[in-house]
Every structure is written in structure tokens, then in C-alpha cells.
Length: 502
Image (cartoon, rainbow, N blue to C red; front, side):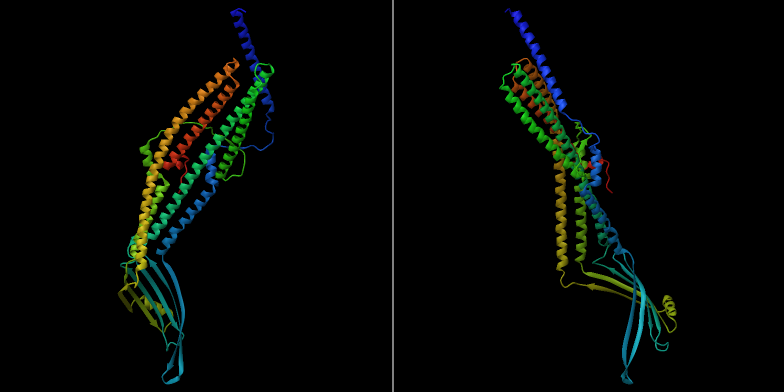
């Protein structure tokens, strides 16, 4: 045969081979399409969920957040309770008194005297430690006007501590601590919010990754089955050796296992997301796509933001402030109790009705006063000194915890910045790798059609493409998670979702 005739024969055979391959692929595609069953009409549709909707559901429904909100409400009760110690209190007193005395002229005879005493008093403690009491007393004997008189008294008593319990700072400590406790509860709620939102976004990304991985595996399975159909067709027409069928069947079998694993991963990721949302099991369709949008990183500005905004740092600072208040209180409690006491009173007595005695006492014609000092020295002051030493240790511990929290914040931010940079390069390289794997598969397919590649070459190229596609997905998800960690390290997660805790 002449060379030109041989070339024409090879050209005709190559063209016929291409037609046969395309026809087989078309048959396999039609068979796959007939095997798919549409969704049954009338069934309840899945939950279509965007990331923003997931965040909203988590803020409303998450059980840990509900518990943290209750802690904030409980802490708010502490302020009015502490302030109540400096509010006036009204006391109503009433008593009945009896006395029996012997009569000298008749030793066997006793005389019984009965009287009733009653009256209100108002007491108030001020932030300086001063205690003021205004008391009004009335005594009415059960006797005739000749034998007894009604008495009334009005007394103002003031006590000012000079050592223990003296000073505004010491007396305000309980109020300031209660207010700080509210801020501690708020910071705890913010921390739980950030952790929950971070967990929800990561779970959303995990589900996106699992869904996309499942799609890639299912597409790879479809291609493997098409390749198997092509191999069977080629074996029937005598174009391919029968031993090549085993490799194609093994590829289909292994890919079916990968699809089953991918579907199980989707189910696990779906359940993890719904648990964070406190939702009953339901099918979920994620609305937001998996995208890659690099953020601009400014480490210096991010560190400054973290020092101002991170809830754990703010909580550590508040805890240190509470520890200082405890030290001041314990130091004051270790002092001796020295106080100045003064009182002034007016009394009225009359056999007339009790109202006359009350009137006479309010005229301040019969005035008595006292002034003095009281010193109380405990015989054993060791408990108060030990409490002071314990408060000092607690303060040192709080200051060390604050330094540790600051170092941890710097480390978290440094790691987040590095991870962002690394994952950015990972995405770029994964995109390049996917493009190369796609080109290789196309090349091997063309070579296979021309008889210059084996069935194993197609299988390996297809497997490399699946790996490259998954590598790109994982790189994008890793980048998005590192971005979430970068926001969490700065303490700005709530700002991103416009959430404010008051």
C-alpha cells in the first residue's frame, strides 16, 4: 500500500473511532438521565438557609446564649440590692411592759405597773459610713393621772466611723462590684455570642464543603460509569482488550464508596449546623455560595482593635478591678472599729392625753444630748488579716490572668494573620492545580480517543482532577475559616453581623 493510502486509512479509522466514542458517551449520558427520578410533587421543601439567616436563628435559639442572657439578667439584680444598704428604712416598734414592786408599808402586798410603748424610727446609712437614726417613742402607763404620766420623746442619733467602715470608696465597693459583675456577665454573653457565631459560620462552611465535595464525587462517579460503558462498547467492537474492563469496574466501585462517604459527611455537617441553630432535623439547602474574596490585613491596627474590643481582655480587666475593690475592703475590715457617737433628744411628759406629750417633745424645751467615742478591738484579728492577705493574692492572680490574656490575644492575632497569608497562597496554588488537572484530563481523553493513552491514564487523570477540585474547595474553606478567626481575634465578629449587647 502506498504511504498516502496508508495515511488515508489511518485518518478514516481515527475519524470512525471518534464517532464511535462520542456515540457511546451519548448513550451512557442518556441512560444516566433516564435513571434519575424527579422529586415527588407535593412533598415539603427543604429549608433554604443563608448564612445571615443561620446567624439570626443561632442568636435567637441557641441554648448556650439563652443561658448567658439569664446570667446578665441575674447580675442586674445585684446593683439595686447593693444600693438598698444606703436607702432609709422605717421601723415600727411596739412593746408592753410590766413591773411588780413590793410596798414597804405592807411587805406582803405587791404593786403591778403596766405600760405600753410604741413609735416609729427611720435609719439611713450614707456612703461616708455615717449612720443616722431619728426615733420617736411614746409611753402610756395603765394608771390614773395621779399615778403616772404619758411621755413622748424625739431622738436624733449620729454615728460616724473613723477607721473601719469609714470613707466613700469602702462603702461604695459593693455597688461598684455589682456594676462590674453586670459588665462581666455582658462580656461573657459577648464571648458566647462570638463563639456561637464563629461556630455557626464554620459549620456553614463545613456543610458547603461537604455538599460541593459530594457533587464532585457524584460527577466523578457519573464519568466513571460513562467510561465503563465506553469500555464495554469498545470491547464489543473489538477495539479494546477485555482486561481493561476490570480497571474501569474497579474505578466505578471505589468512586461509589467515595460518594457514600461524601453523602455521609453531608449528613453529619448538616446535623452539626442544625444543632447550633437548635433546630429539629430537616433537609437544608444552603443559599450562599462558597466564594473567595481576600481581605486587607493591617496587623498594627488589628492589634489595637483587639486590645480594645476582645471580650476576654475586657473581662480580665474588670476582674482585676473587682480584685482591687476586694483588697481595699479587706484592708479596711482589718482596722479597729473607732467611731464618734452623738445624739440629741427632746422629751415631753404630761398627765394629759398623749398628744400633749408629743407636742411638748416637739417643742424641744427639755433637751438632752450626748457625745462620745467607741473603740472596739478584737482579741483575735487574725481572720481579718488573713482575709486581707487572700485578697492580695487574688489581686496578683487577676493581674497575671490579665497579662496572660493580653499575650494570648497577641498570639491569636499573629496566628490568624499568618494563616490568612498562607491560605491565600493555598487558594492561588489550588486554582492553578485545578486548571492543570483539567487540562491533563482533556489531553488524556484526546490521546485515549486517538489510541495513544490507556484506560488507566484516563482513570488517573480523572482522580487527579477530583483531588485538585477538592484541594481548591478545602483551600477556600480554610481561608474563610482563617478570616473568621481573624475577626474573632480582633473581637469584631459582632460588628460584622451588627449585633450589640447592652
